[in-house]
Length: 524
Image (cartoon, rainbow, N blue to C red):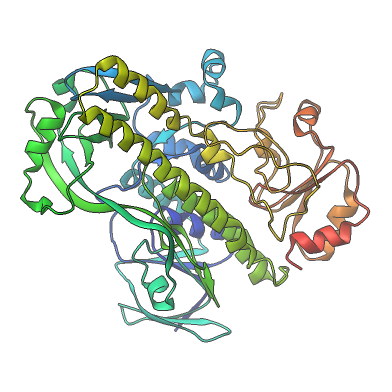
């Protein structure tokens, strides 16, 4: 029988991120994944800026860039009647090459680059998983069982006992279910969903076509929206060369979609025939669903096991990666013994509101797309359609969605009584307001302010008493000065930043109640 501190169910991006984060903290974990190779039909294709910031901590940002879709010319979203037909609008985001070069003209043009070192990074799940797997395999604290699945588990109080399909019995202090929307763990626990639930049906076709770019002649883009009656949908670039996906919207739920000819649908959306090899067909539904509870005893939910989103906005996988970042340091603290009883409970208190926020943003985006599609179906003229598309395309200014979430009302964040900054999906109000992510600002030495903190508590500014109070609780602490060029930007001379990069406390001077603050942020 094998015992591990943490048993992780699911080896997708969320499970891998959690395992990697724990391993870097020295916490042994075992990851169990039924698949033996990366997902074939990628459900997620976008990494937001916050996920890239989290991967930056392990030096994985460059590996992600090496595997992502080529973006030398820009991140483009096209809106057409048929793809080979009329182009109404082209939405542009900064190219990865220009972001990496910190090109002054690009930074001046795209305000999102003032809020993070990263922009949108298009990488399919089938390309991201190998990057994470390669890194994971080099971590001695993380073990993996691919080709195995969970058959059953029992929460025995002091531990969880799990049986795998291989016949192996595993005991763990904690079990984290990252096993997707059909999570066996969530279903066994009887945890239901809240939200709008299952929404409209869709069908996606993953196909190989080296002729795709030549067939439409509009160049490489990340997304190609088609607004013509009977062929509403969006083409997604998977590798930017020969792998593509088409999400066919408004598939009639009363019709057996298996009777449709995928090539006929693709040709209708393109506006002309082209060579395409169908690799996979996936029937799926939009969802707006959040698990009613995220913890039952020693079992916790993360990723799609805890929330299901409409894929408009790219927040599903990214919210799951955020779950992992929040949970990893709290599990470490609990296992090492310096966490108070409220620390692990704060995982649901913090992440569930974020999931709810993001799960509402996504269908709102989808509803706007559907509204324009409905108008396009009536045959409105090109000028009017372009105006409506400009209104709809505002959703692709999504930096606020990915970077602006914060842990308001968290039991382990110390409020300072100031008003909460605006929460706008389209833009970021950089702030050290307690609960916010430490904001990015370039320093004179070329680092980001994000690089001032690591995987432990960090006291920024002159507050040695607070650092001593945290050490008295057993928490790992680092101390650093705030660089002069960041002092005005941070607005507060003293900050306490958590191991996940969120501000836990701020003040104008050394706090007189340091012991109370330390007890609060460690869950005591």
